[in-house]
Image 1 (cartoon, rainbow over the protein chains, first blue to last red):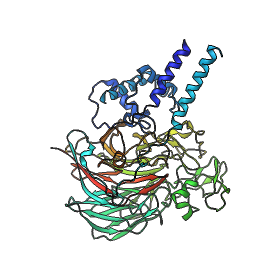
Image 2: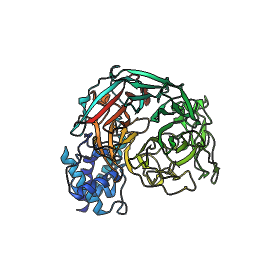
Image 3: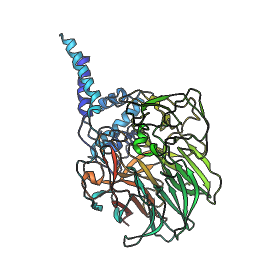
Image 4: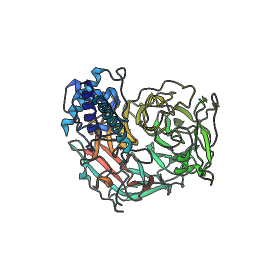
Length: 111
Length: 485
C-alpha cells in the first residue's frame, strides 16, 4: 500500500516536472491581503524564484500551472525531484512550505 | 518476477525517468533561434506588457550595442554605444545625444577598447566606464564638447568581464570591476571567449591576500597546436600553472571582482567591497545607499557551477561577498550539481561570512543595469527596476526556456521580485524569439532627474548560434516608460 502511494506520488510529480508550459509574465501584483500568500511570495522569491522566475519556466520548468495538490508540492520541496534540490526542515520549516504552496496556488489562479 | 520485485523495478524506472528529464532535454535559450530574423528589427510598443496605467514608446532606434543612458541638467538624453560585444565584435565606442526627433548627435568617440558599459552625468561632465577588453579598463571623464580625460587606467578588464558603473556619491566615483574568469580558474572557455590567446598570462587578482586550498583542474590546452595536450591550472594563477595547499596569493589594487572608488578629482583607488563575480549594475537608493547587481556563475570552463541565480546586493564597506566559493551567501560546496560533484572551495580561508542578498534573481537572467524610482509621479517609490539582458544559453549553461528579456522591479527590503515590463504572449522571451516587436535584450534602466520617466536601454538582437554570440548591429533601441496622469 505504501509503495503504491509512493509510486502514485512519483507518477504525478513526473507529469508535473515535464510540463511543457513555458510561462507568462505577470506585471500586475497579486491582489490579495491574505498574509499567508504574501509571506509565501517572499519565501518563494528567496528559495524558488531563481529557477522558476515568477512561477514561469527558466532554468527549471514552469510552476504556475503545476497540477499538483498542496501536499505533493510540499513533498517535492522536502525531497527534491530530478535536478531540483531537496530543502530540509531546517531550511524551509513546514509552516513556511505551506505558505509557499499558498502563494503558488494564488499564482495559478492568475492564469 | 514476483509482485514486489515488479513494483521495485517500476519505481526504479520512474526514478531514472525523473532524474533524466532535465538531462535529456535540449537547451531552449532566447538566443537559440530556429530561423534567421530580418536585418530590420520590428518595433511595436503595444507588444510590451506593463502594469495598468503605464505607457511605453521607442525614442531611439537603429543603435549599435547601446548599454546605458543618462540625462543632463537640461533634460537631454544621452546614450553610450559599447563598441564591443561578446562574439569578438570590436567597433568604436560612442557617446550620443538623442535629439527630440530620435536622431543622434555624436558627442565623443573612444578607442577600440570597449565595451563602454555605463554612464552618469554629474556637474557638467559625463563619466563613463570603459570596459577595456583590449587595453584594460578605464574610467573616463567626457566634457560636453567631447574632450576625454582618463580618471583611472589599467584596470584588469581583458578577461570575461569588464569595468562597469559608475555612480557618484559624496565626491567619490564608484565603479565595478568584473572577474577575468567564471570561477577563478582560467580554462578552455577563456580561449573560446578570445582573450586567452591575446593575454595567456592574464588571470584573476584578489583585493587582499588569500590562501589557496590547492584545488587544481586539468583540461585541454588551447595554447598549443597538439590536440592531446593537457594543462593543469589552479585558482588565481595563469593558465597552465598548478597551485598548492596553503599557497598565498598577494592582494593588489586594482583587483578583480570588486567595487572600487576614486576621488572625483583623481587620486588613490580604494576597495569598497570584493568577492563579486561580475558587479555589472550600480545604483544609489533614495537613502543614498549603494546597491549592485552581480551576474552569477556559468556552467562552463574548468570549474563549472550550475544553478546559481544573479544577485542584488546592498554594499557594505569592506565586505567580501563570496566569489569564488559562494553564491548569494550559500557555499558552492553545498549545491547539488546535475552532472558532477559540487565545486570544492578554492580558498582555504574565507575573509568573512558573506552578507545576505537583498534579492535573488533568475539563473542566467543576466540581471544588469538598474535604477531606483524616486517619485510618486512614476510610482513604486524606493523599488529597484532591474534590466534583465536574458540568457546566453547554451554557452552559459542549459535552460528549460528563455530567462530574462524583461525589466523587473524589486522591493529591496523584502526581496520581492515582480515583472514590470515584459513581452506579451504565453511565452517569456526576446522579441526575435516570440516574433513580435517588443523588448529584445534590456541591459540598463535609468530614471530622468524628475523621476517621472524611465528609460530602458535595449541592447538589440544577440543570437546564440552554435553556442557562439552573434550580435546584430543597428538593432538597439531606447524605450521610454511613463505613467499616464
